[in-house]
Image (cartoon, rainbow over all chains, first blue to last red; front, side, top):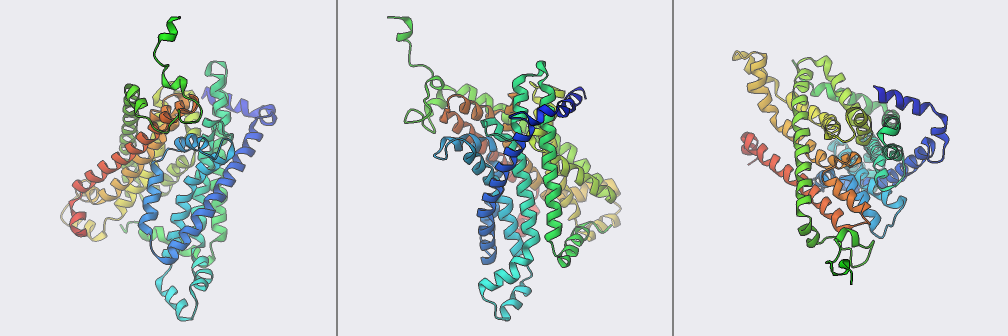
Length: 238
Length: 239
């Protein structure tokens, strides 16, 4: 617990927050990188997932892709991408993080459109809605909770993995931890390492809580009840 | 003429330029020259993965059973492992390493186990809850007690769910071990990061990456094969 106390002492020093390269600087970098990565992931994952879900095929490919990205170490992409024409700096980090943001966004968008009751779809078609109208007026509103769930998973994952950017000097809160290791345990770096760890963990939990609230807000009342009942129905009867 | 000028060309990592034809993405020569180091990194990586997954499974299965037997505990157990899962791996390592030891692989092991726990608990629990009520009633009617029913009926029927969790946990653990590079215990991650720091030596980075992804896929296939052997009934139903 000694190191935890040192960590809190480190966090209590205002200079550690306001110094150049201090917590506030790193937090801003972290959030900017994460925001761009999530936006890029949304720009790719959502249209693709919605299109595949609307067409009703490609589910196997979506799952295969999601499982495949699970096997790719973040560290590998973070080190490989700067050596491609993307160059050094923020772009490769953003792209690397976006790659891991796409699967949850894509899979949830696909599931969101596929879980819609086929009867609802038939009814909408029977009322004379065209493919585009069906998508805009029926399918998308009904899949909003799933899109929000995907966004939450992806954002939390991006914020969490953005800490790894420190390995390639990409900025973000991970730099605090890396700098702590640079100082060395014997010179009091332990406190800074723990402080960085606390900061990253708190940020991830905060984003999770915030987006869980957003997810609740955008879920229409009628769908909210159904979602809450589902786990109980799946639970054992006896 | 000095002694140095007659020496063979310097070792690759030192001479590798940042870019250009002298720094290919893959080189058999690198693999050949560094076979020992590559093998030991692979061995360390696989060993750490295996230890982490086995420990996580040993912890997760009882937790899942506890959550299954005492329903009020289901929420807290899932919530706790969910919070642990949300904490970034690097942060977890940063919190664990100073206390456990910044040069010991136990720190990495602890972080990996905590991370694999959620997937295993959630999937095992899903597998257990999917056992049909009639099957449970029939087992009770045949005189099985709670433990006997669990061991002979419910766990075998939950195997597909448990195995799915095991595969997911294994694949993500293989990728996560690389984060251990933070304290110099990253297995193949050491090669990836080492290549990056070593004047952007692409062959080293790529070899580490390929082996890492390959290891994950091989382990996944092996576990899938084991799963097929252990659950012959799912195969019959499908065909």
